Length: 606
Image (tube, rainbow, N blue to C red; front, side):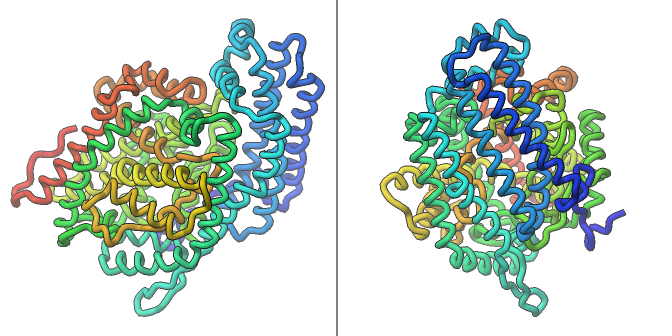
């Protein structure tokens, strides 16, 4: 058994290839490049995007080859990224990733050619004539719409090639630079140079002085890095604006809404409901300040533990708790978690050079890899459950083709939020009344992040795009816009003097041209997951019978249609309010517990 205090696990990908230097990897890399070339040659032979006889047959053949190519290339890319993400100083891994990204440009250009061609076809007629095309109907219909938002072929080709030395290069700079920032901090009388991920993790510690000192040590390091990071952000957002304009989108937000499968009425309904909850969250922040013995809640105290929930959650204990909690939903969910732990799917140890945060990535059909920076807290345990939810989602899509597995971000969080909620409810059910305030506080961290903080980042990104069209922006302006977004959402819930002006510098999502307005899909996914969990509690058995099918189809239908199958209307503010009512009840209960008399009130109703 692993001693989680001394040796948290690293993931294992050697069952794919022995190493990056192995002959097996070299052969797999070569075959993947050949597969890409073969797909390009097929499209060339068919004369696409020109007039093609028997278009349905040609399109079916292309989809088959495209799926086979993506299956192979996706596994190769995940394998390489398993090395890059755990050690950004690995020059060999970085070089191979760059080489693969160069080859992937050909796939991107091919998609542009195919999209332009599909725009000339009678898609509905072809779908009705072929089972293969019918299976990919959602993809083809979206391609038909997207074809109206393409530049001329030569311009799309140039944009794809320049993207490697533009937004992609800036994104890599951000990842490599921020993962290698070392922050000096005094620990036990000794000045230590600690990774930024470790410094930021101290915000979860019970030691108030450590939280404050870590925050005060963090900010100057972002200040030192603000010039290159501002240059990166200016360049990426400038590229996004230029391409959106050239492709005929009214704004980057409109392009993002299409990418995420929703429209403005859905976004506006969701945002109207979330803004209405801000006063409730401020009640929570004020109550938390009282629980911590403070008059106002500082930024660096927002995630501090309250009460006995600060007890350590060892890695093996977390594993057991997650497996038991998942088993209450279904044996399949439990078995997925057990396999992830037993087969070394998880890289849990924080260490220099490893990227911050947590994610789950598809590796092969039915098999994922989970990156975490485990720190023995309740939040770290629930984060593992969250990421394993993504792995369960991946498993549900095992029988789908790679093209059918392309989820919008609005649906990508569906299983992860559901699984995290499942584990939070299990933890609460086992918690004595005297310790419930601490657990409630921990369970309110995610809602506070994806409802309040995410909205501040949405406002920030809106303002960045609004101003960036006229000129480049300074690091100081980015900081001012970030603080303005925090003021609009947190208000006096947090001490304004401690707002975090450099959230724009540390969030990697801002540094991807493909993830513009990455933020609102997280709010959508959280609230949609809560809404599904409520449906599960109402009708457990019928829900179980339909749930995995829903997960398997998240790349095959739009969110509104999938929600309708569960009686949910996502264009109604009422649905979003009903999901947020779950959070309000937790806030009400927390406020009551913090100000209650010595006699514990009745357990929170679920």
